[in-house]
Image 1 (cartoon, helix red, strand yellow):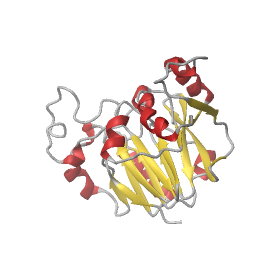
Image 2 (cartoon, one colour):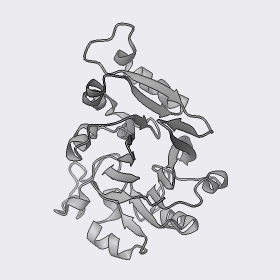
Image 3 (cartoon, one colour):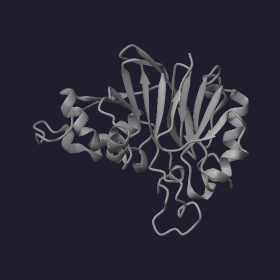
Image 4 (cartoon, one colour):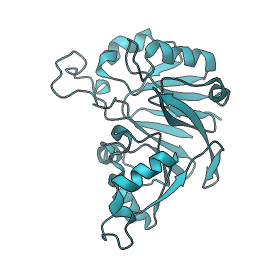
Length: 255
């Protein structure tokens, strides 16, 4: 299994338009962050996690032409606004794209991309099959996906566990019942917005505490804002098994 971090930035991305801070002015490519998304490969099966407004560029940057399903964490536009950019993959597949998420999120997709659900849709429109994710695990092409219910301030959203990989973004709280589902991980990707506390996202200390409890072999921080600081300054401060994620980072998951 392999995961590629397609985007590791917060909702505004990094650099932020008009910002003159050291991070936004950095020339280090690891400080240039598209909106958060990931690509998971399990043998011949390929999953996309979230489809934000930078999806087209992310697919091009990483030479991605195969997507078998899209797992959606929640409906905020930095995670969903680029769903239409899956059209070229849909045209190559010649079959509807399978999309999974909470029923609330599926309702938003049906509303925001209503042209894809018309009885007689425009010929260039994409086609989606929407699947409501509940508490139980589900299977896509024989691969088991376990939803992890977390909270983004007061908004219930999803993380996902695939084998010994777990991907959690935008969380600010994980209940003990869900923490138990994360035992025995090899690889954890988790959000860490900045150093100071935030009302709706884990900060660096909170993310590191969860990593310490779960003890994965390796962990990667994502959904990172410019307020975290530059990669060269933060990466040396992290525990040996933790990496500040950056766009294009590829990690192998050991089973």
